[in-house]
Image (tube, rainbow, N blue to C red; front, side):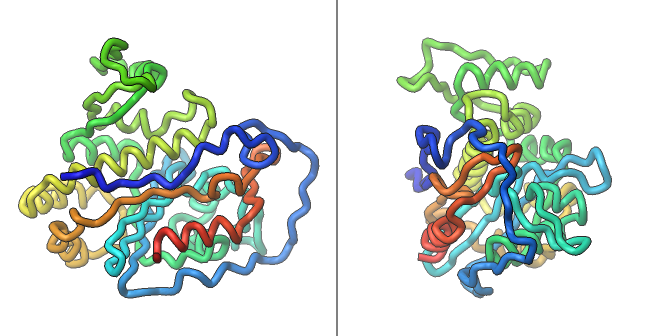
Length: 302
């Protein structure tokens, strides 16, 4: 099958005023104390479903949600869009009279419900469902999928090897393309390490969310090659590992439509959009929320 995936995020690291990858402003930044007004762009729509995918660390009761991706299925336009939400984005969290802090804190403060409320409030994305995995269980899910073919560079290979001592991953420079990447098969533990890597390639969390989108793209492409019977078997293996509010019957409905989803265009996006953000202290500030949400809306709905 042809690769119909599209990544609409751009490399904005060259913009030294807005979109820079280095902290540029540590002076106090005053934001209004009142609750933000969410954009009214993503109404509930039977033809578009938004599912929040959460990867959480369970050191504390709820843990920080270090992976947050909104998967949007548009049955009219026949697209599936996976949108990364940056963990350090400065947002209003509706708890204890309102707090302004990093987006990934919402899950730690109040679990999935508070995280979903925070996303809807700040970005206007009305989420239909959620699927949540802790990082240890993610290894089993990837292994049940049979691992994935991933394109990685030498630094990423070294990072994976450092996190997974049992890995037999070898980076062969003679097989690298013109950009210094090779394509290798990664198992569950290696994929978890790759998804959590925020140490190589510059850009810190920007490159980490790019890796996560790459993994989702590879999983979608692999899913297109699986029969309904294989998908049902995979579903039976992984559902006990996943915390979700999607019923088994709803999952079966998605499986029944799997053959049609294989023809959908797979797209990826990131919030904040390129050139619409800057670092402030340890936070990411969205400097142009209207442009960010409009770009997301145009991609998902049009």
